[in-house]
Every structure is written in structure tokens, then in C-alpha cells.
Image (cartoon, rainbow, N blue to C red; front, side, top):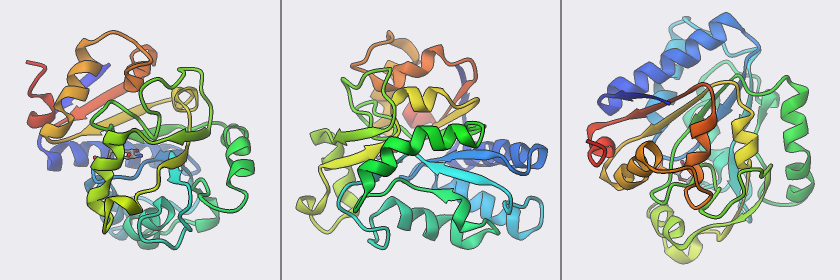
Length: 240
Ligand code: GLP
């Protein structure tokens, strides 16, 4: 795993450049996208690059990592809403080519088809990930099998607490989600992970210095041939 340390502004710019290069090289790239606070600056950079005409997303296909069970795509904490608000509504992407797991209705059916759907587009060319304070990626909590494909997951207590900052009350945070599995993520050809802030320092230390273990979901990445971990000083502070 390659590691890049910089300010949030610097690393977000560098990751955005990776995405821009990818789409310039292959206009119908398949991009794996993440939600959370971590990728927000990356998405802002992509919006700017699109508006200035440096890159077009009109032929791009996207797949998001996860979605809360119980939230409609119109709910302001759903990940579909997040993607529309923070990226899709501001770029020239064809929304019918954007895939986000469903949180209601036939969500199970859709989840069961998700990995095959990704494969039918040739697989994910470039995947961005955040990381939870407990080392989760997407909603794969400690204990998730490294062989997992897209599935229903229970959120860890610490994740519910972390994510409650975005809801009016902790009781409103869904306790279950649909998520791409660890194997689904490993199928991506290239992966970038972004982590900033002290709250991520322990997870980053375990990822960069710990062993591969299903108790640390992000450690699945150790065996991937093309992963870059982008961190700020705070997230990196326990490594050195
Ligand atoms: C959520 C998401 C993850 C994300 C993590 C960290 O639980 N399911 O995909 O990486 O939170 O979020 P943040 O970037 O807001 O710290």
C-alpha cells in the first residue's frame, strides 16, 4: 500500500486528479463512490473540473458502496440524496448511469444482483473509500468475512454513535444497511482511501502497521495490488 500524507485540501486535490485522469483516459469509466464527510472535498474538485470543461462525466457509470436500510432516496440522510446533492446534480453525468443500493422496497433483490451488475459493466476501474473509526469500510464492520459480496449488515454501536452527528437524534440513525462486501471492494482495479482527523488515527495505525484480520475490515486491502492511502497529519499521527 502506498501512503500519501498532506492536508485535506492537498490530498483531496490529488485524489480528484486520479479520477480526472481515469475519466480522461477512459470516458466510460466505472467509478466506485463513497459517502461520508471524507470525500466531500474530492467531489467539490470534480464539480469544478467538470464546470471548467476539463473533464466530462457524460459516459461515466458509477456504483456507490452502501445505503441505510429504511431511508428513501429522498431522505436527506440517505446516501442517494447525498450523492445527488454533493456530486451528481452539479456535473454532466447521466443519472440513469449512477447506481446506489436501495434502502427500501425490493432492496434485497437489488443487493443480490449488485455484484453481477458491476461485473456486467466490466468492474470498477477506480474506487474511493473512507474509513470508520473502528476500521470499517463501506458498512463492513469488524467480523465481516473477507469473502463477502453485497449484503445486509448491522451497524456497530460506535458507527451509530459516529454517524448520529448527521441526524437530529441518535434514535433516528438506522441500525442496518446494505453494503458492498469486502470481496466486492477488492474486485476494484484501483483503490484510493481517504482519512482525515484524529478520530481516524487508530484505524489508520491498525491498517498500516497491524496484521490482516477480519476484526479489522480495512486490512483486507493489504493484499490488493493497487491501493493508495491518503491521510492528513492527524489521521497519520499514531503511525510515526
Ligand atoms: C460511514 C460510511 C462509510 C464511511 C464512514 C466514514 O459509516 N458507510 O463509507 O467511510 O462512515 O465517514 P466519514 O467520512 O464521515 O468519517
